[in-house]
View: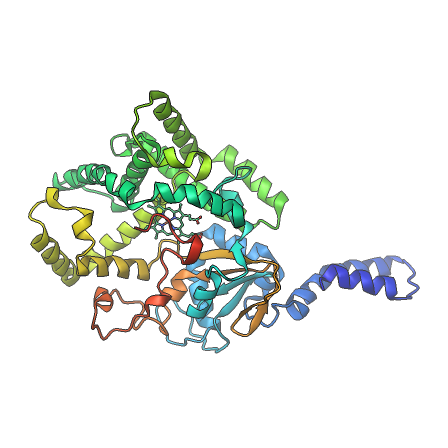
Length: 445
Ligand code: HEM
């Protein structure tokens, strides 16, 4: 029973004859402010789940930490503080409590750090779907990213064509063309900011294959600043708005102000311009948008891909042995850049291990992937706690990937753990950089 229902019943059944003096009004105001707090902390169905006090009483706590951009580290620390694993590692707080892998990060929001949670939350048979968080990606539009239930199944049948292996193979030449341009500028000895260059590369490639016209940011520094800056701002404000989906007025204020004072909408406008131009040219060239029309969100995958590339290169530059082993494997398989194909590269075991280890140690979606428990006659139970319908529940990906229950020496970059026969423990089912189940990444191939 909700707090509102309980109060209404209490007031209608009580026969109290209350004199409304100034003092009584003050008491009523204090009670009105305290009751939701007491309810959320003591009587709420999620009250047994540990978490920071402020998180239990308001979504604003969670929203604040999303706005700082460091929520993934906070969740990692919280899961160590409240979780099962008590190993001390650099990010982790020293507290050693043993209260289980659930942490309450909002009055109705639960973060999970366990393999059991991962399998249940993303299972196609659980009474769970995407949370309303996703509607902030394209408010007012029927985006495939936010669609749930039958609406999503309909869109997925369109999306699957766009991501079919044959279509992706045909795009390889575009990937190579852009990648070679970046490599050439590196070989020419130019100093390169890897973070900046890799996000430029992925935006140039994805705009080319998704919309039929590359943004060509590599050769246009002014445009690079606008598109790159716009994507960073879009990511920040979309996440903040999404987290506040139970606060529609605040959400709207953030949307209006950020649209007015930042360039968050610029990349989407640029993408729409490119798509219209390409279709007017009617060149007959197949791009992903041919299949999707209004079915997907512009820019999908560029930030995750560039983060994955950056993490991989950063670790290679820090671990000379790993770099040397990888260089040896690649050079023995190919004698020149032009020989490299995805078809062959995907079978290089050490290359695969290096990429998997990068995706484990810092998954690009490292924060919280939210889902919502649906009304159903089957209760949704996680670690012996029933999560009622409407609860938002998600996996804290970085915490899970660095959980010593599943990965030995979790804060160390050890690609060898992914190679058969390795003694370093890794629990593949707990590895989830692309998420799991029917809403996992479509671009993972
Ligand atoms: C290393 C690179 C990538 C990583 C780690 C990654 C990771 C993910 C994750 C974790 C999700 C689930 C997100 C959620 O439920 O909130 C997702 C969804 C998605 N990804 Fe990726 N992604 C990558 C690259 C790409 C690329 C290159 C594309 C497309 C060109 C792409 C297209 C998509 C789409 C369309 C979805 C939404 C699926 C749905 O709504 O059911 N991703 N990705």
